Image 1: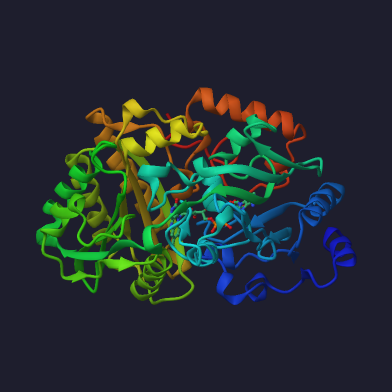
Image 2: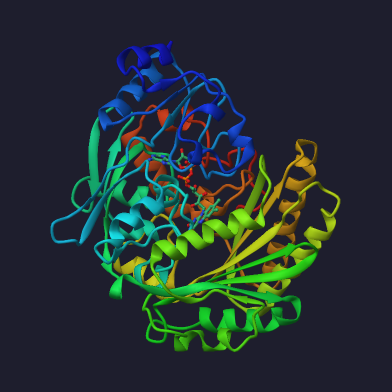
Length: 485
Ligand SMILES: Cc1cc2nc3c(=O)[nH]c(=O)nc-3n(C[C@H](O)[C@H](O)[C@H](O)COP(=O)(O)OP(=O)(O)OC[C@H]3O[C@@H](n4cnc5c(N)ncnc54)[C@H](O)[C@@H]3O)c2cc1C
């Protein structure tokens, strides 16, 4: 009935087919668990008032809903829903650069590539996602790691204002002066407070519209050197490095253990000095050069596609955070390859471990920009952010794979704990459905988030009628997390 109501009111914007046939083909779900769900209908609002109407219809008919931006949520129900309304935001595709070029207003149906393409013409950028097809919505509400984190903080730290549709269907702006409590909560608090229809974000100039970066692929005999370089770069203070960024992805391709280091520098100089240690390690493949942000992002997108040339891929992921040091990174890498060996006979099993650093300069930039719901302390940095991701294709293997991913995390966390390196923080954008993310922000931050939700959503619409993803209480699977502090 809710779907019928919406389709009478907004003809042509409600689709009753299977979810897999709806929407633009390139904007399907990243995880097959999400793709196979069958909502009663998919609603594509074109304006915040239409979003408000859906929220009203959902409450009137007690019809649960999910909200989809880029569809990269990694588990069933994150942004699609069986038998309910899936609200797909792709028509909210505004991108408007302010007259003085300092701000950009972005509709939450955009993917980051759309944003970079538009900004590139003006030699501008924002601290957004690195892969082209990831949604502006999920990434920015969960925090957002970018190539520019050390100079700009998290993506959410760069959002000056959110346009939000609340549970009572009001459309409001949340920023430093209007609803500042909600502005803070949306910086990392996820989908718990309302549906965000657009954000206004700080831009910054890119010299000549370019940056330096690319992929460097290393064989197993170079792993120790790679981790040494990662640790040294990650430990640099703000006066040493705010422009360089790194991601290391440990994986196996055709039986060969490989480390794929994604290195970037936001000033377009060849072979930036802060990267000299990395660049002294021989690489099997090296694509680093001076290029645009769009071009860099596209390369990551195509490398993802090439390395995982299978469709209908089920996904599991999980995350943990530690004080940065080489020992914990080496341990995590070894656990990753143990997991790979354990899953050797699982069809198309593709475990990989993504290593990133939350640098001290990133934590400092966050504080300068007003802070966020993570409540991370500069004194605790730099931090090693671990993201374990596994793909596989046979549903019969799901339980085994998910358990293996969870065990790998648990082993690494235990080792970190024994050595006093473990941190409570779980990064929402990399977390698994067994993790209690909001509790990991600490009691103070969680209490503040709960109070904000109670104020703006006293009936708990976004807790009960939108059941998917990381809610304020407990992990999405309904279990208390074994990892919560
Ligand atoms: C290939 C790949 C690359 C990635 N790269 C990065 C990266 O560079 N940096 C990083 O930090 N993370 C990265 N991630 C993680 C990514 O940030 C999360 O998966 C994020 O949730 C994806 O957002 P989405 O909009 O695409 O997903 P969706 O599944 O559409 O959304 C995720 C959650 O956010 C909610 N949501 C989305 N939009 C709104 C809205 N407007 N209002 C209210 N709720 C909303 C959804 O309901 C859902 O619960 C990457 C993930 C993948 C798979």
